[in-house]
Length: 416
Picture 1 (cartoon, rainbow, N blue to C red):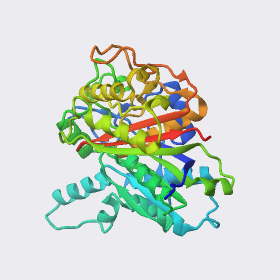
Picture 2: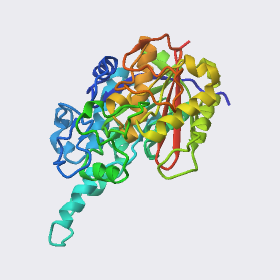
Picture 3: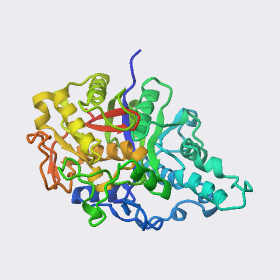
């Protein structure tokens, strides 16, 4: 069976550094940090008092107030990003066969704030189980794609992938295969997360996963820097419209890039720590290249998982050197988490948008906040430190990894 070609025809982004894909891209190039003191709740007794929250965002500017009240923030974010991507793709909703349009989404946690608030309300009450009737529909991780499909009437495959921080990259790979295999003409894919909550911050602090650089939040996310001390929690959503190539050409769609392959693997090592030799990461990048029918030397740019954790950054760069050999030193490597923070289940989609726009515009966003060389990192690797670099990019890769050892990798190519 000959696999169908898949292209990207629409993008939407809602991030801590920009509330549209264009704002997001401009902020990436300027090296803008999205980290700031938390405004959602009182952090006086928390170890970490900052995060990468959305700025100047009000869901009711985009969603009917009554409907928005029935959605957790992660679903609100999904709706806004998907709306932008669908509009950007210029899909004719009256002409498209909605039976062949799917929505495959990613969320690592889902409605954490809804769950937290309902349980706190019960705990602070008299023991009577007075739960909101929308408690369960707001909380469940699969509700975001469900709401997108309801709004637009898309009747193709509809579900959420949950693989921690690899979730939206996992969703994109599933979406790619749905079109490749002829099951869909179009798939809306991506991911969303809204874990900047009491439970989210408290839980990650208890694991010692978050940076505690409270005196300088904007510099706290510092991938590859010797002084890094943990990741910065972010929130938001990224959405992509994937389309079968002939379907896109027939309607005269604007094509950003070709989605040529993906890969999945497991570390099979530890619940939260990466394998120190990067074994699972090596496997996932090799799987991705093989799936795309490309060689290591074809890759010009890699947006790393690069969370700014002591162990993870080193393991990933070791894996890149292992897979790409001497060619690794010619690749523009970066971590946009230095600006957006870590969007958990939305990270893969938001970072895929970055590599697609980098390829389209011929420039790689920087890894900001780097001041001190880590002797455990190969100094000959080009980590695109502190300033964007111009680069003719024909092939770009994005890595995302999650607790549980989940690894996902996606690969995009300039359209021939």
